[in-house]
Image (tube, rainbow, N blue to C red; front, side, top):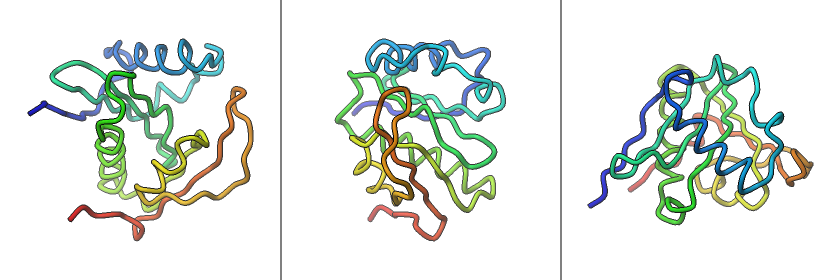
Length: 146
């Protein structure tokens, strides 16, 4: 059985957060570096997903309830780890008193977020040249596992 953990991580002292985003967004998806790195990182709550003690995923949560920069390395995809990561972010947000969350989803990932209870709330638009739609989730919409 693999050891999967999600923990909050400090932006300034956890280089894996930057490394994963560099690999996924800048190297794979060709997002310009100046669009990937922003001032929101300094004040965000960052999450680091590890698989067998290897850093493989990350996400961030802003105080406004906005989730962003959700990324998994190729080696970690297709194993349900994205749901593990997102559920950890959502549970953290709920325990912090947040009752609704928003995110900007790449359109190829809409179904992934729908499975977590998010609903689309915008038309399609381009962000860094990639089609996106805004999505929202409210506490009452939590999907529980049986």
